Length: 484
Image (cartoon, rainbow, N blue to C red; front, side):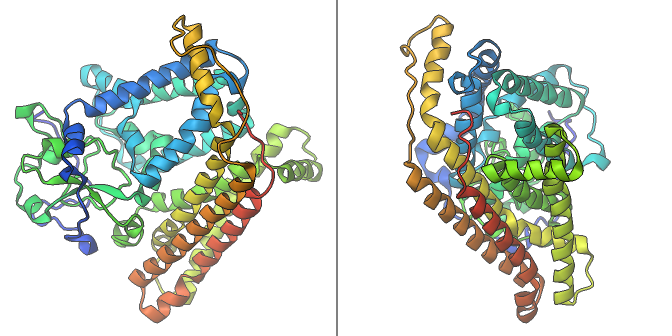
């Protein structure tokens, strides 16, 4: 451990670590709550959470291959596509990136890495979020194209492939290469964790500045405590984008200088603008269009549109029709609209900055709106299908020969009445739009003088309004209750 070579994030300056606008801004530290601190600082806290999800993943694989072929009665499909997705977005929104903290894939891959890993350095030209974004888009495409929600076996296969990908990546490369550059679910979690109300953060930047050993990153060999697997130095950490909430930094710091602090959940979107990565901006934009495409493919008008595309192009194969539609709305449209509104912004601001520099700052302002699409969409499926989860657990244990929870009793019904779901969805999207509007204006104020800022953010605001209207029109349509 003492000879471990650590590659710190680019912002690191061992002589004068600082955070620009974020300097010495702190919120309530959850570590000051004794019970919570004891739980999080326990050496095996993360491992216990990972083991719980590892058992859940094993259940998905087992039930997916050997359980009921009927999706609403299989733990794999109900657990993965109805309950897990909704709980994921709500935990990110209300707490933080706890699912990355509890990731079962890295529990397996890191243990293999420590014993037989090749420990190669991740290629510099592959850094960024492009691979993870491509894989996330592939999963969203496959979900609809191959009806993953209706196939327990395919759901189990996705889980197996996920494990294989994590093991292979971490076997070849050192550190957390899978989490940082490859994992599509991790990309989703980390991107939207930028909107989380908590952040793993140093309590005193001055103390970080004077720290000669940087145990938060390098670890503490004397206590056999590893440092941050994502190589995030607490003296310059400004974002949740790469943080997996593993809390190793807090356990390794000999000065008790790391806390879990409450913060303004959207302020991160308009701070440290000069350090933004273009690939993160692309993720922010694509996720919004992917959310609408994913939800839109489950309503009746989409089927009519798909038939129209087939008649117009002469392609009678539904596979290729959907592929064209998906690539158009998740690839071509975001690229064209993203370029256009960025170009308009530069014109209105009378700026000579490169389009890339403008885009990567403003695009993050769309995250609250796109997150609201996912929440509103998953709320519908959860409200309709969540009651089917417990019977699938009962059925799983019955087939394992351990009927400790009794016989499964499948019943229909919703958690929320249908007439309440649509108003909730519209309200959620409205809040997302208002929050994005505030974020976009604040970003503009950070970039330009007040008078210029007011007109410069209008193109991105118009794009946000357009997306919000599309989202509401999709959500108010009768939607297929898939997997329920």
